[in-house]
Length: 131
Ligand code: HEM
Image 1 (cartoon, protein in one colour):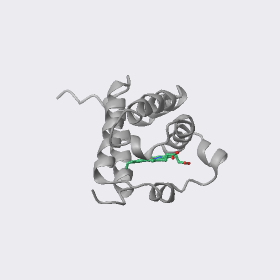
Image 2: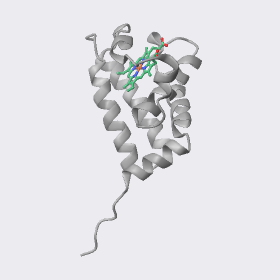
Image 3: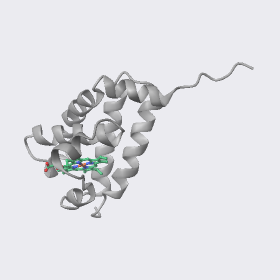
């Protein structure tokens, strides 16, 4: 029997981090968020700061340098998101922007799924308002 080709997720992730992949991801992602009608009302007009914070956060969250903690202190994402009305529709919109971004990145499908599944889990926890 021919074995299934296996992916070394750890080395895919390392390569992504080494190439500073979250820079590109975050740029493409907020290009989408900033144009999504469901998300525009809760984000500031200028995405410069949130882009930088998200770049630091995702790098740290996925095992890279602890850039967020070093620059902004311990991450308290539940508190930060509790200050914004996040409905199931907005969570869905956010995740759609993330999925579409990931599909535009030249990365292994397994890494794409790994990022998406983890972010989707966290996103569910940030829903704090019904429609
Ligand atoms: C459920 C859908 C989500 C919505 C609608 C949402 C919305 C927002 C909003 C409105 C802000 C504040 C922007 C500002 O005023 O500067 C924000 C900040 C942020 N979000 Fe989300 N978010 C979602 C999910 C997530 C997820 C899943 C993550 C990461 C796991 C995340 C990470 C961040 C980070 C790192 C910041 C900046 C935090 C800071 O100010 O230090 N968000 N988000």
